[in-house]
Image (cartoon, rainbow, N blue to C red):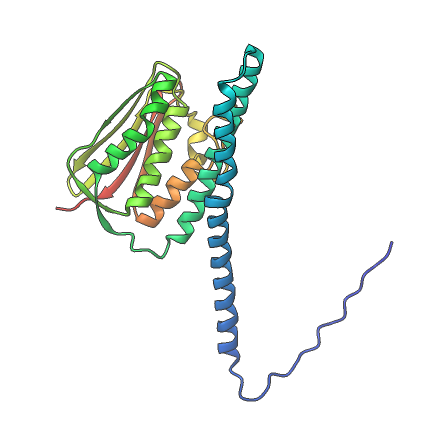
Length: 256
């Protein structure tokens, strides 16, 4: 077998007058900046370059759906449409995960009114719930939390999307809020399949799914929720009974 040898490193002298601590700090700073620039580039690519082909595919799907005559062809096109939707969902989760890193330096303690946020989320998910035959109830109590509007919306979006995905047709998803002293509790509750007790301890890890039998999705939704909560200093609580549904609660400080 051919062996590759490496010569011992030869120490080099530092030119007089050079501050090695400053050099190390500058190199470290450059590395941090390069890492940040790389993340920003990935975020821009995922948010723009990769979404454009998906839009073209979706438009072509809509056109083809009106021209196909065969039932077999329509079923095949429907499967392609489902795959495209899954891909778009995965891409959205990757973008959200990258956005968490980019927003780590933002001011994350702003007054955020809940009612407008709830209204936007209700409008966003109403059609998906209707198409699946699920009752979606969104009711916000008056109140303002100390949070970040983008990150908090992203947390609730992931929780609502999961609730709809894991609730069979005929079930219900409830998004509500209530004040408890100096805290405001936002709940996303469903009547879905629930989570096994043995799985509860790992559902917030990356690439984990509440239902291992489902092949779709990256398993990043609850990972994003947990890391956003850590950035915001919110608590996330979960209660679930297998076969009876789940309830995820985001607990945040409220303004007086």
